[in-house]
Length: 205
Image 1 (tube, helix red, strand yellow):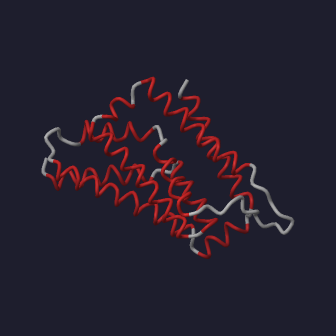
Image 2 (tube, rainbow, N blue to C red):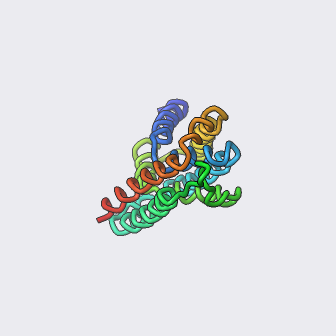
Image 3 (cartoon, helix red, strand yellow):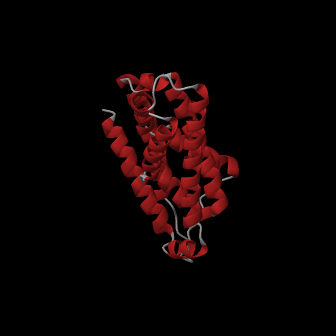
């Protein structure tokens, strides 16, 4: 397989992977509705940073260790606890008498970055994805330059997708429509995070 063909396969596979709704998607969309496009950008950068860790782990073969039952169970429990924490924050969102959501805390740029980072890093599906990518799709004799180029492409696609998600949900008309629903947006997101967390927790048993 030529490098261009390999690049096309990786681009297609990664686009499908990042565009599937999951914890990262709901983190970026909820935060962008609340805090705007800049917040979505910082969270997207955090997600990319988490993606870098997964890519390096896959390239070094560490991903093969991470998918061992004992290690994967630990990762799943950590992921479940983090998602349940996000779910609890959403479900306990309060509403003011004026029917406007009370801001729990406006996150700083650093906090937004690390929220995206941890949400991505603790996703137990990603070690499996990158392990299959590095063992099934990428040839064992791939050069360091080609691997670095593919990694850059995957990081760019990840950032581009989530930045686009943040841009969409932070659009004034979209924000206005969602903010009319007030606290129920937070509680719906909280319910989704809780469902994700419980699903991951039960799968770790």
